[in-house]
Length: 426
Ligand SMILES: *Cc1c(COP(=O)(O)O)cnc(C)c1O
Image (cartoon, rainbow, N blue to C red):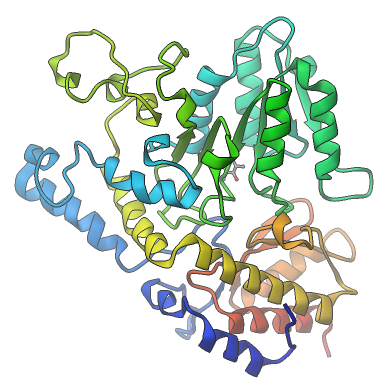
């Protein structure tokens, strides 16, 4: 797509935007003069939609009026509350409803998945992850390795970018899997890397890994609600994600988990169980006889945190109305426009470390600011003073993520012009 460096052009793109009406459904943070800030931080915490409160109030009202009977009555009874989320969640990640479940938080789900899917043996016990992995994932993986009695420095394999490069080449990753695959029990990679914004070729990675007999799991923290995912088609073994980033479900929101349908009846897999993973018909008979629910729901442990699920339900209705195809279409354009303007206006002062190819990134661009060690932070602080909310990642990256549900092309334009004026004071 060809873009133009003009505000009229940005306004014109906004006028033509098929998703433009969604912006009005969100609370946009404002400055002291009541002017909306430019919020490019939906990759870290998505904005609150105006319908969120209705869904939370529904639960609070029901609790006040009906107390324990709220488990069984009202528009969304609490007992099966997580079921109201399944179909729409499945659409967001390209899964069947029975392959997904909403529960716990991301890292907890990652542990639960590794209990079932990291089954190291003497000859095949290694875990492949990316270098510079998100710390929580690294801690989780390392502790699982130790839990199984292995040493993490021998067991972990990290795939890195080549010297002088920012991103991992897909071919390097695939070759490593070909080479070392016989020793690898589990491959755990991000859908989109939190720091660089690189999107991984999940379909191809899974295909090559399965040929070598490895299990493949993805951390979709930065991919769910961002990329077009097809977890079922891609044959991914498991995936986990949080809902407070692109999925707009609010701070600490309940997380998601995917288990491929081929494990639907694999009751032989070890798991950490609780009563909520057990057959709904006999759950309350309290016989103590285990009878696991087939599919992803069988990995639940506790009864659902409905107050945390309500904002997610509100949000998923919007994703359902907008549709992931349309969201991804606009997202590619928004980010493409951002990159075009950055290259045109700021190329000598910043480096975009996120891949340039559309299918190797999502909404986010990661910018390295040229100059001394403090320059990046100074630019970030100046942006913040001028009403831009984006985020700063040590040691030297500003992450900006215009998201298709509530950001506009005009905001992208205004952001780049502001950044340009900060970088090149007249
Ligand atoms: C945000 C994020 C998490 C968050 O983990 P929680 O368990 O929700 O605290 C984990 N992994 C990655 C890659 C993330 O980006």
